[in-house]
Image (cartoon, rainbow, N blue to C red):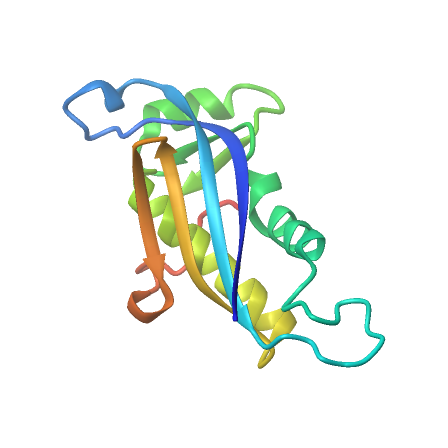
Length: 160
């Protein structure tokens, strides 16, 4: 059985190597759809009977692992030194430093990697992350599917 939960968060970024508008500092209202798989709980009397996982628990796990870190943060590429130095000069600024450009594709990969490990560590054998879809705008998104997932070369996000 597959279940999906949708999340929304706001974050800023820029693509420092881009030759058009995305080179400028800007932000998005991102939408993240997370699909997990697992068996339906059939234990008589269990609070989650008939569910793969309670949707409120899905919300808690994913918010804690990812959304709370990225929401209202600036996602910056470690190689974008001018912007990174500026952000680091702002006391208390919420900055997430990435080893890759913060494109929708890379953010979807990073999100999948983080959530994959979260479900692997907490629900081994019972639940698995299947799919992540990250909308950068209502008309543009990137998908990562378990069958095609390859970890990012560095493996993790710097500074998170």
